[in-house]
Structures are given as C-alpha cells and as structure tokens.
Length: 380
Image (cartoon, rainbow, N blue to C red; front, side, top):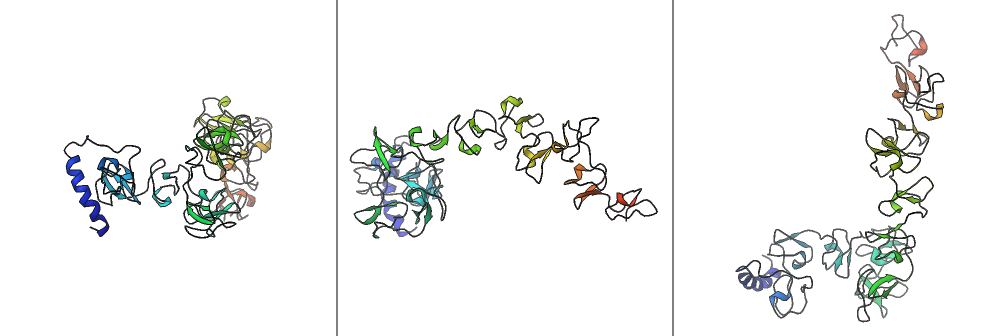
C-alpha cells in the first residue's frame, strides 16, 4: 500500500464497518462532496470518508461511484481501478475523461482538439494546449504564468494578467451573478449561451446558439431546407440531397435503409438486394458499395452499370457499351479498353485492355495479351 493511501484507509475502514451493516443504508448523492470539500460526516462525501475534508478513494479501495475515486480512476465492481470516465461524470482534470475534456468539474461529451486541430477557444483544446489563430497550440500559459495578449492553456483563464484555473460555466450550464459564464458566453435565464451564434458541430445548449439553427445532441447542425455540402452537417434524421439542402430522406453515404426509391434522397435509388439507398449510374461516388445494380465506382468518380443491366447510352455502362438492339450494357470484346475483368466478354482486363493469357484458347493473335496465338490455338 502506498503512503498516500493510508490516511484514507484509516478513515474508510471505520466508515465501511458501519456502512456494511446495511449495504442499502447509504448511497452517494449527486451533490456529494469530492476531494477537498469541507465535510462534517462521512455521508457528506462521495467516498464516504470524511477527515475534516472529503478524501478520495485510491486504487484498490471500495467505492460506489466514479467520483469517489481519486483522479485517474473509475469505480468498477465497487473497487477503484485505473481508467477514464464517460461524459457527464465528475472529474478533476482533462486526463480523467475518456474524451479528454473536463469542463467545470464534469467530463464533456465533446472530444478535446489535439495539437494543430481546429478550435474556437482554449477550452476546445486538450490539456497543455491553447487556441491560437484557430488551431490548438502548445504556446499557451498554465497556472501562474502571465497572460494578456498571450493565451492561457485549456483549463485556465486569464484574470488580472495571470492564468488561473477556470471556474467559469460552459455553454448550457447554470449561471448566476456569483457563478458566471465563461468568456464569449452570456447568462440568459439562468443558463449560459453564446453571445454570437456558432458554426457547425460547435457545442450548444439550444438552437439559438447555432448559426445554422439546429442543436441536436448538444452539437450545432443544419436544419431542414438549409444549405449543406455533406450529410454530417445536417441534423439527425436529415441528409444533404442533390440540391445541397438538408432533407428528410435517406443518404447513400450514411447507408440509410429503404423499402422503395422514394425513401432515398433524389436522384438516389433503393438497392433491392441490400435495402439501402444507392447511387444511380452517372452520379458521383467514393466507393463501389454505394452504386446501384451491382455496378462499381469508376476511376472518374461516377457509378456505372454492370453488364446486362438496362441502359440508354454507353456512358451509363462500366463497359462503355450499350447494346443498340437490346438496350442493355454489353461486354467488351478482346483488345477493347477496360477497367475491370468484369467488363470483358470472356477474357481478363490486363494493362487496360481485354485479352487472354497463356494458355487460354485463341483464334487470332489479337485474342492474346501477348499478341501471339500459337499454332496449337493457345496464347503464348
């Protein structure tokens, strides 16, 4: 046992001896005292250990809540063990939180930004980083260092020319004259809100915090009918349609489920074999799995139709050939240009053309990739 754990153990043993008489006699409350909080009795503390001020439970000691454990630990099977804490759980430092962001003593649901990543304020950055010119930088001040034009690191704020630990309330948190909001926030109706609307994916407490008008899951998003360039910008239940507006329809990139084509953002269709929205021939794609009718995503970044699928012109077909007679995508004959062996009639796509390898049967030299058909009618 470490020397630091002994004072807690002396207090905790006596407390647990009483608590164990009835395991349901005491449970930590939401306002229980954490490490260093003045206390009058064990029940005042999250750890059920009061020694004038609340103690925290070191690794290996009994607990009933994560906040009972010392920094860097979580409560697993009523024992404090090394680990990180989920969003909404009390914390002492950014390193306590799985997402690396401890705000006003609670793990934030938003991941902190790493070095050189985009930020709007130092609170967006991970520990030992500050927001400078819109990016997280290590050129920031920690506790006790001078500030002014210089920026304090995440977890600190500039007061009277010195970086001090942040004690302000973040967006969405309760506020009052004695418990103010952080910089760039105003106390409105007892809750902290931005003084100016924020961009996409910024933390928010209500739609009024967001320039795009939507706040879902405490993140700013674009509402129905507003312009967009990608699905992730739209609020939950919406997708960025072909007109670049958020619409209540299924997206291809999100793999939305569908029962019929009308469930998908036009002009997308419904892939009947997978019941997911897919991209029709001629439209942009990033991977073959997005394309309808077992087609693929071509090198030019558009979907095409596989052989034997109905077509109106060759540009819709992966082979580039739409049969005039049958109006279906036809295969590429030997020596024709190709991107995949699936485009070829009965040969392979090698070096960008359909041809046959040794010892495939042949009739003429041009049947073969080597351009040599041997007397025994096999390719060299």
